Amino acid sequence: MIENTGERILLEKETPLMISRHFCAYRFARGYVAGKKVLDIGCGEGYGSHYLAESASSVRGIDYSRDAISLAADKYRKANLRFSVLDVKDLSTIGERFSAICSFQFIEHLASAEVFLADVAGLLDEEGVFICSTPNKIDASKGSATPFNKFHLKEYFYAEFNELLRRHFAQVELFGLKRSLRLNFLRRLKKIGLYPTRSFYRLDDSSNFTIVRNKLETALDFIAVCKR
Image (cartoon, rainbow, N blue to C red; front, side):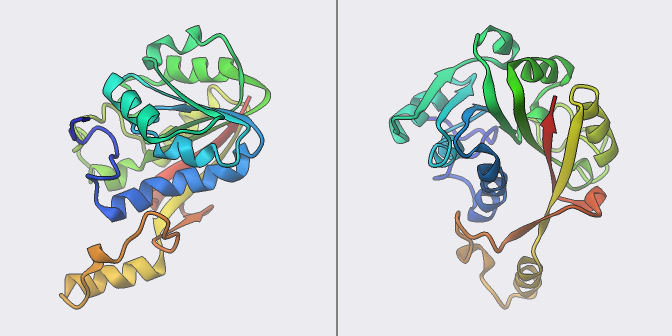
């Protein structure tokens, strides 16, 4: 049994709303990974890797936690899906290339992302794509110099995240995850006690959030699509 420390999403432990938010990045990525060989970095308990394996040719999910990988390998089984224990500092030892690499809500757990991004770029094949998400510092830590989440070592504003990625990739396209109009309405109802919002959310409910291409500075999360 994996301990619920708050470092990663566990479907049986997390709130439905947070699960829905995190799942949006995987749903977004699915259109980019169809028929491709995929690496999912920081896969945690594996639900996202399993989802991508429904359309990818193959998926390898990696995480430094042996407990997380053990849970993932036992819980999610597909012929084209495998999980392995690997620390991010050892990415360069993988010895194979991928046509798509995903890393969601992970880069903020690194004190410095420069080596990580250089390693990721080196693992992509010539036409490969890197899809990465991270929380907006404005939303995640409300202006605090120190991240509120003890597992986050470096959070990013829009401009610095964009600049960081462009140092390692020739093409960077950024998107933003925001609450949908429907979710904002339900939040207002909940605030005044008229709707038990928590009971409504579901993992596959795509109406909780929306992905936008403008006004990214105020997004909840950034999602980047990068190519060498």
